[in-house]
Image (tube, rainbow, N blue to C red; front, side):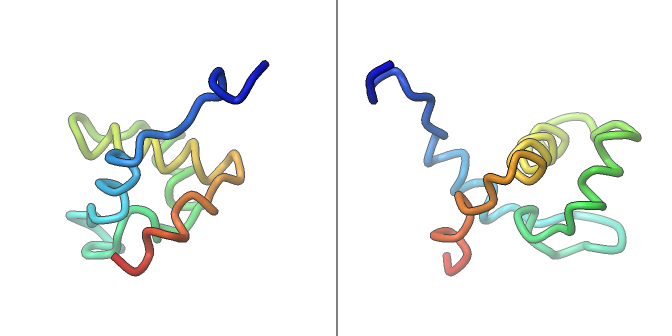
Length: 78
C-alpha cells in the first residue's frame, strides 16, 4: 500500500473535537479530548447521547482505546 492509500483523520473534525466541551455532568466544561478514558468507555457501554455530542464522544472513544491520543497533542494549545 502506498502512502496515498493511508487513511488520514480529517483535521477539521480533530479541531472540532479539540474545541468541544462536555456540556453536562461531572466533567462539564472539560474538553472532550481531555475526558478520562474510563468515562468515555462507560459512555460506550451505556450508549452515547444522541446527536453531535454522541458522535463526537464516539470518535474520542475510538481514538483513546486505539492509542491514538497523540493526534490530540498539537491541538491542546488551541
